[in-house]
Length: 196
Length: 185
Ligand SMILES: [Zn+2]
Image (cartoon, rainbow over all chains, first blue to last red; front, side, top):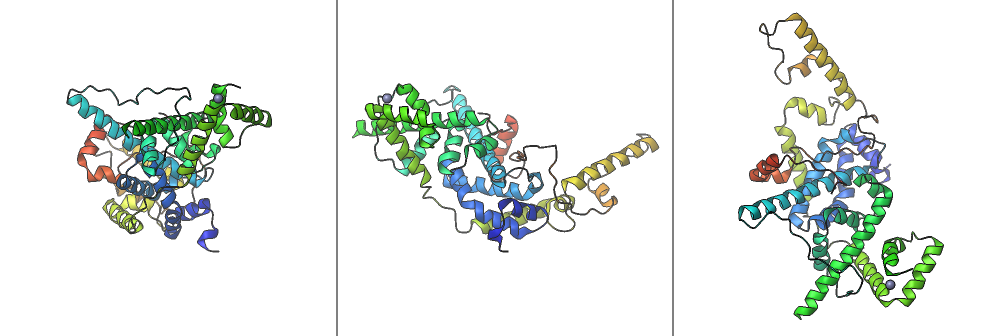
């Protein structure tokens, strides 16, 4: 039986029993998809790599925290998502802190208010950079669901387990996140047209 | 169906999750409303872009750096900690850790009953009690009641590469006493 024939859950069980090759196989299986997940989340390649390293170190050092009743992917996405969110929140707090230290007020940066009726819909060229910028403007709880659903293509059920929220909440949140993303991209496109 | 109903159902349509009846009225609205048709087309386009993945990729030496980091990180930890997490016959599972905790409490209770506080230290130096205990065998992890979801939050702690690279970041995060929770925006 080659390592490719083992499920992720079998591999983590083998790693828990002392097989380091099983850990390396899991790293190979998950490194690229976790990297794109984290990169979409934080929008910075170096930071995404560092957070991916932290995630994989956690898997190594906390391997006994995993229980077979959950999917391995749910567990590892939870770790990566938590680390990414923690890092982004720390950055936001530091930004808020330094702004208040400069006398610029402690208010968090907010999106400009947008028109919620579908009167402005522009379908300009959606470059990767524009998409990434728009994702960065989504609130974290919207960003998380839309990345898990549309980038990682996870099931609603798995997203519900990762985020520890009910299935119905996941579905409505995904819908609102997709609409908001569309709105942000429309506005970005409109701003670009106005400049041209 | 009006435009706001359409917006509520847009995502379910993209995920092929609408019932037959809802799908029919959704499509009826789509045919007669140019704005909603453009909205949906734009959403589909964005979704396609997201699915295509990112062009950025991991450094070629990523895995080598990870292995090096694990080696140096583990070497820095005390021997008793390495025995807990390192694979091999001497590794300890949570089950044996439970037994260890009971044994340690028993030793402490006996010490308390035998000695007056001023006569002897109550707590042994770190690491000694482990060596004094019985030999431990690696036991495969069992589903336990401590974490029924099976999804442990292990995302806080001292393993962060970012914090180790930047002491100011560590100090700042300590001040903030910040604990993250997925799903709690
Ligand atoms: Zn409409």
